[in-house]
Structure formats: structure tokens, C-alpha cells
Image (cartoon, rainbow, N blue to C red; front, side, top):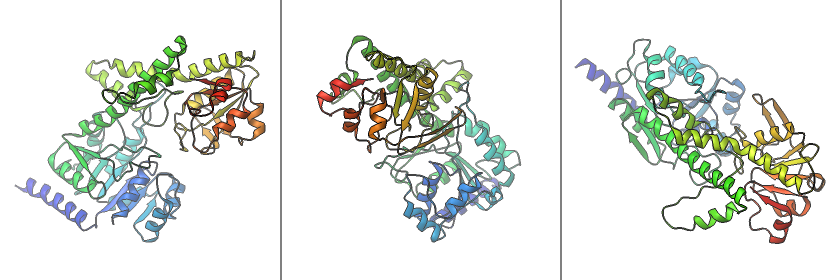
Length: 448
């Protein structure tokens, strides 16, 4: 009976703190997931502390200086001023927190193997300071089993038990950077735990600031939900890309084909081709599931094939660029090529895993003289690729002197009609020139 009383007591204490907004919340990792979540919890009246190894980033947050576009500058400044938000690089303060939410990166290595070093490192930091009654929730996207197989043993190494002395859950982030319609608050939140007490407490925590909670039966189920969501997108984008490759061989316009197909009011969902996939989710998350499936002697053939097709798209763009230049009897070697857009997504300053980076390097390796313009991300620094690049203004001179302009990312602040009027040749990988005068498009534009 003592065991049940202890569990109930810890859970009741935490729920009471959630009800009266006295629960202290810590968010580890202040990137594009962590900072928006921190702000949403503070907006409903909780005192939230951000934790980040980067002391400069933590100091920025504590000063109310925003660096994430999905966060309103005024919200962060106000919440810091009112004392609801602070940040620190001092992980000893984790012991003060009633709830700790982990929002750290989960990258892949060069062999497409999951790298859980950030998750493991943060979990060890928490384990050193873990106390009874705390809720630990992982939001980082990962393979099914991470919370239970990697985090739980580390947290229990000191003698406390999940579901008994502390609570453990997984609630995958569903952030869509740049999406103005669906935010942290109004995007349905999946929450899973491996015991009823942890699930109950985690649901009580998340429903304080998020409109609708979807509870699932385990942490592994919650982990698989998120990986499946991004695998679904990866596979369907790969199908669109493969149709684009086929249409190129057949001399058909893939955009015309898809636009017509998507007029069907049932049984189909719009996905479009492009120069590749980017961001932290689609190029990475499906490989987490692919890797985990091998443990069960199971081959995820769709996932592997989709990844292969999507990774090949930058090479296809370079091949097509060579063919476009050949129309003017020019080779890639020695030609000036201007890339429009380096971010992985429209109207965003994030260039992680952007296919434009790969295209840039492939063209440069082929001897092209490379330039890029992207007002959202005018300075590219990528240590893994060895890139430190500065963009150029989109001047008349730059446009007219380029032998080829490649539209790699469609940004709304670019006047594409002006681009067409001044450029010699345009390779449009995003159909950004759709709707512009037919005469201009026919004369200058080659589509993906």
C-alpha cells in the first residue's frame, strides 16, 4: 500500500502544481522546437526556465532577444519582463524543475545511423539531479524504443523508478517552421507513456497550453507516430520526384500532370517534386525507422527507396542544368550560375539539409562559377560541408550576367517576373514562375 500511496501522492502533488500554475518547468534545448514551446507554456502563466549548453543563446533568451521566427518578438520580451521566462546554461538548476521537457537534436551520422548523443547527454545530466515527483518528457524525434530503452535505464540508475518515483513520457514535436495557421498551441499533441501514472501526469501537463491532446498507449507508440508522419511525406514526395524524372524522359510537363491529377476530389493528396528534401525531419526521420526495423529482421523497402530517390534529386538538377546551358552551346565548366534560394523551405531562414547546398557544391565541383541570393539566409555556414558563403544582392547586373539562374527555393520576396526579364536562362525546380506571362516562360524557363 505504501507503493500506491507514494505514486498517487507524487502525481497528485504535480497535478495540483499544474492547476495552480506553481509547477516549475524546464525546457532543455532552445532551438526551433524548444523556444516556441517555452513561450507557449509561459503565456498561460507558468514560470519556465530554458536550458542550453550555448551560454550566449541562453543569455539572449534571458534578455528577451528572439531568434526564432515562429516566436513573436513582443511575446518573448514581455514574458521575460514579467518574470515568466528565463534561461541558463547551468544544468544544476534542473533539480529545481518539476517538469523537464527535452528538445534537443537527433541527427544521423554519415552512415545514416541515429545519433542519440544529445539525448543521452541531457538524460545523464537530469539523472544526476533527478528527484521524486518530477516529470521528464522527450520531444525530440527518434526511433521507437528510445525513451524506454535509452533514457529510462539512465534515469533509473540512481535508484528511483519511472512511474513510481518519477514520471516519464514521450510527446513528439510537430513544429512546422513558418506555418502561420498551425502553431504549437493549435496542433494536436500526441502523448505516450509506459505506465498509467506517467501518462496521466503528462496529459495534465500538456493540456494546459495545447488545444487537443491525443493519448497513446506507450512511449514507443508516440515515437512511431512522429516517424511515420514524416515517412509518409518522404515516400509521397519521392513518388512525385520519380514522376518528375519520368516526365523528363517522356518530354511531359510534370507540373501540368500533377495539377490536373490533384483536381480529383477524393483518393489523392497533393505532393509536388523539387530539387530534393531538406530540414531536420524528412531527410532524417524515416532513416530512424529504417534503422530500428533491422533489429526485427524487417526491411523497410519503401522508406529506403524513397530516401534514395530524394537524395538523387540534386544530381538530377545539376544534370538538367548542364542540358539547359547546352542550349546556348555552353558547358557547366566556366559558366556563371546563380542559385535563387538556399533555405530548405519557402520564406524560412533554415538551411539544414537543404538540397540547395548539395546543388551548389556539385555545380562548383563541375567548374561553374557559383553565386547565390537568399534574403532569408544571406550567410551560409555549414561546417560538415566546409561551406562559408556570402550571398549577393539580386541586382540587374547579377541577373543579366549569369549564364543560368536556378530557382532552388521559392521565396515570396523575389520578383520572378523581373528575374525572367533579365536572366538569360532559368531552371525552375519549384514551379515558382507559374502564372507569369507565357511568352517569357516559353523563351527563358526550363522546368524541373
